[in-house]
Image (cartoon, rainbow, N blue to C red):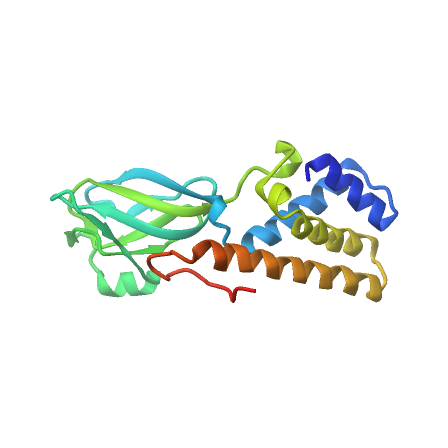
Length: 209
């Protein structure tokens, strides 16, 4: 389902006409809900980069949504997966930022960066494996969800439209039920069936229908 088909369906089902701005708002809110509710393997990326000597911070990609893993290559050329820890743990385990070594842990410091522990004692190559927020179907015209799970996108948009119209509780409840069923199916695919060969279960895994 492309964006034109999506907006036509929203207006046909709700029997209402909306402005382009309103339809875009419903759609972007629906996408935000879906992408933050389900880890979709099709929406993951790898970014190669470097950490700098004496710098305990690593910038996150601009389209970062959530992390799968972070790894670094040591001086012997071996890839080492860093362990995820809370920032408080890293601060307590490595209270002196000038105490350096090969990084063992990482934490999400803020929306733009990770913190590493210990502070790198040299420049190292790193790989960040992450889930990203794709370009909206509003501007791209198509999207993975629209092409592969249009019922989840449509039903979530209908909830947003019903909320905007202040629909009666029965109508709102029906749309929410349809959305929840579609999201459950998407989670079974994204968090379950597409992860059956995942090496390390550090990810949220849903029950498979």
